[in-house]
Amino acid sequence: MSGSNSPPCADQPPLIRVVELSSAFNGKKIFERISLDIPRGKITAVMGPSGTGKTTLLRHMTGQLHGVSGKVWVDGLDVAALERKQLYALRERIGFLFQNSALLTDYSVFENVAFPLRQHTRLPEVLIRNLVLLKLQAVGLRGAAQLLPSELSGGMARRVALARAIVFDPMLILYDEPFVGLDPIALNQILKLIRTLNRELGITSILVAHEFAAVRQVADWVHLIAEGRCVASG
Image 1 (cartoon, helix red, strand yellow):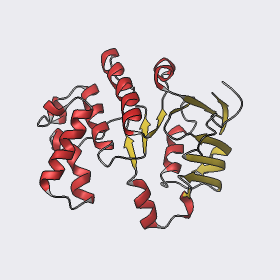
Image 2: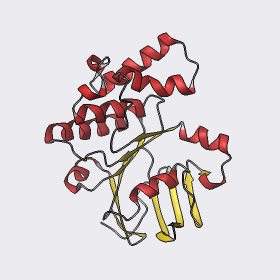
Image 3: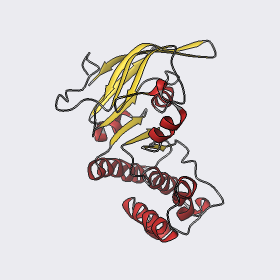
Image 4: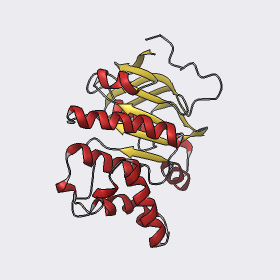
């Protein structure tokens, strides 16, 4: 790893820039003037010991949290300065894969993936059906559309959540500990999906993860966070 926090991508500006961000929660310092760049179209991993604020950093990128100083820029927008409507519009362009998959337990796989479309659009039912089946096909689960979450393995549940995360064709996907609790077969499936979706959809991906061996297989760039700063990148 190098000492620079900027990936060597001179052909285009980074999708996300974190500039001198300082942040605290309940009086506890989380970040102290942290700076790092997230390159467009690449897979970037954010790693570090537990409690160093990796997931908190994702929440700054989506405008759920604001720092006491510094800036977070996403696609040229100062996230902290956005009005509510602008912030919602930005979030619609971001897919989020939660560590626990966060599936609705009483809804089928199909309905879980369709849920954001029903909540945030007025698309006709036939188009919703086609979109959902297309996304399930992308993660290899078209045949599981009518199953309930309780009938899924951990790896399958993670893939359903990923189908839901890409249902709006986002510019950015945030993966929060996507490898936790997966057996080797499911882990390899998720790694392959992350790489394939990143390439075929032309998106940017950010992984928060602890598993260095898995990160090495998929990430184009890694930021290491410790003691409130980005201490190494490469």
